[in-house]
Amino acid sequence: MSRLHRTLVLAMLGTALTAAPPRLAAQTYPHKSVTLVVPFAPGGTTDIISRIVADGLGKSLKQPVVVENKGGAGGNLGAAAVAGAVADGYTLLMGYNGTNAINPSLYKKTGFDPLGSFEPIGMVARVNNAVIVRPSLEVKNLKELAAYAKNHPGKLNYGSAGAGSIFHLGGEIFAAETGTAMTHIAYRGAAPALTDLLGGQIDLMFTTIPTALQHIKTQKVRIIGVTGANRSPLFPEIPTAREQGFPGTVVDSWFALFAPKGTPAAVVKRLSDELRALMADPGTVKKFEEQGATPAFSSPDELDRTLKADLQNWKKVIEQAKVSLD
Image (cartoon, rainbow, N blue to C red; front, top):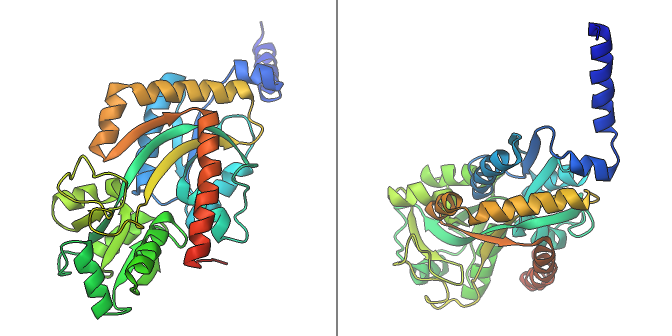
C-alpha cells in the first residue's frame, strides 16, 4: 500500500468514526479524550471531586479525562456550555445541587433546562457543608455567631462560591432563622472566597468541608458548625446546626455527572457502569473520605428522581427566602 493510499484510508476511517451513527459511535466509545467541565474556579470542592473522578474514569475508559474549569454566574456558564455541546459523550458536566437544582429558581435565564438539557449519568458524592470563620472573630459556635450578628447588624461579611450558590442560600437561611442581617460577598468560586477569608477581607463562609479542610486542620480558619444532617466523620466534635438549636439550617451538597441531552443510551450506560465501579473502589472511597466527601453513587433514574425532588424543594426555600437574581 502506497503512502498516499494509506493516508487516504486513515482519513476515510477518521471521517467514518466522526460521522458514525449513534449505535456505532456508542460501540467505539471512547476513541479520544473526554472533557469533564467543572462550572467553577479551580480549588473548590467541585474541582477536587472532579479530579478524583477524572483520574479514575480515565484509567477505566483507557482515554484521558481532562478537567476544564468554566466558572461564572453561579455555575451557569459551564453548565450551559455542556448543554450546548455535541451529545456524543465526550463533553460531560460535574453538576451539583446548587447549579442544577437551585439556579433554575434563582435566575430568569440560566442557559440550560435542568431536566431537558442533560442526560443524568449518576450521583458521585455527598458532602457536608460547614460554617467557618476567621480565627480573630470571637465566636466559637453558631449560637455565638447569631448573638454577634444581632449585636452588629450588617457588619459581618460572609463569602460564598457565587450569588445564588447553595452556600449563599445557606447564609440567607441562617440569617432568616436567627433574625439577623449579614452582608453577602459573592465570588467566582469557593477558592477565591477562601483566599479572602484567610486574608481577613471577609469574616466567615458557608462552604463544603473539602474546600477548607487543610486550613481547618492548620487552624488558619475555625469551623463552628456543620449544616448537614449528621456530624462530619473528620470533625466529630463539631455539632450540627440542628444540634446547636437551628433546625432550619440543614444544607448539604451533592455532586453528579451529566451528559448533554441526546447522548446515546449505550454511552450513558457505559459511563454509569464505570462510575458505579469507581465509587465502589476502595482507593477512590479513601480519597473521597480524606476530603470529607462520602461516595454516593446512584443510577441515572435515581439521580433523575433526586433532581426533580430537589428542584421542587429548593423552589419553595427560595420563594420563602425571597432571594432572586438577574
